[in-house]
Image 1 (cartoon, one colour):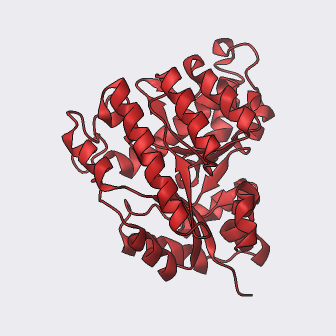
Image 2 (cartoon, rainbow, N blue to C red):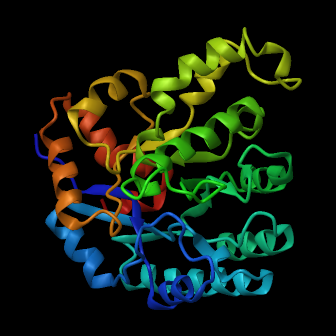
Amino acid sequence: MSFPGKIDVHHHALPGFYCEAVAKSQVGDLSGAPAPVTTIQGSLELMDDLNIATSIISLSAPGAEVAESTEGARALARRYNEYALDFRHTNPSRLGFFAALPGLNDKDGCMAELKYAMDKKADGITLFTSYGEKYLGHPDFEYIWAELNKYKAVVFVHPTHTASGKWASPQLQQPTLDYPHETTRTAADMIMSGRKRQYQDCKIILSHGGGTLPFLAERLKTLSSTLFLGSQIKGAPLNEEIIEDAKSFYFDTALSGTANFLDSFLKWAPKDRILFGSDFPYAPNNVIAYMTHSLEKYEMDDSLRENIYEKNGQALFPRLRKWI
């Protein structure tokens, strides 16, 4: 069976003005990952090489907050969204975008930028796993979930550095191990705060196969429902509700295309919740090709492969159905 082009939901576009903002920041990107300037041509060349029909571009960590002031972050988010709109306009059948927001601690700024993005028909919104020391289930951030739920928005959750910003060692930059764990922490926080169950009209994509959530969900269920039962908030999910909520996320395959991951992940994740992801440009093109070819060679039934490559993405982004 021949398969149509893939829909890539984990594809970053980093314009020069954003990379300059990261370089000028006193804090910079604490993850240790360089921010390479990207171009439309570079995105399209990778897409052609790997049979990617459409990429939904996004801003990666540290995001607009790197501007360090409230007004600066608002301006950087707006400038990125204007850039992303132009990016999509060049080839709307092949390009989409997740809009950027200022940091979630800036409620007024986020609400204004979310309205702007939705008015411009952004394909979704990018959020990061934490803001300061707060994960996405924090009560201070309920306002954004309530508003996103009204829009029935697609939300792409990308990991950012830990609250401390420290590396475990000089050889272990944060994207190597900490990023998947940060994804797991924020997902678990959303589950145990009740936020995931409360705002079910949000379609939330977790990066990198959901981090370690697929492997730790049962541990979260058993310990939260027994040993730590007394610490749970009123209305928090218990027992099988925790697993239901964990499986209600969407999961992209960025840097997660090898057999050691897929053997267990594909048995656990719902078949309509898995999406293709490349992680361009933070993963070098040869690494993206390796992960993509590993996924392509992995034995699975045709219907599941078609779901991952195309159908699950079309369900989230119906406008793409007329092109793919």
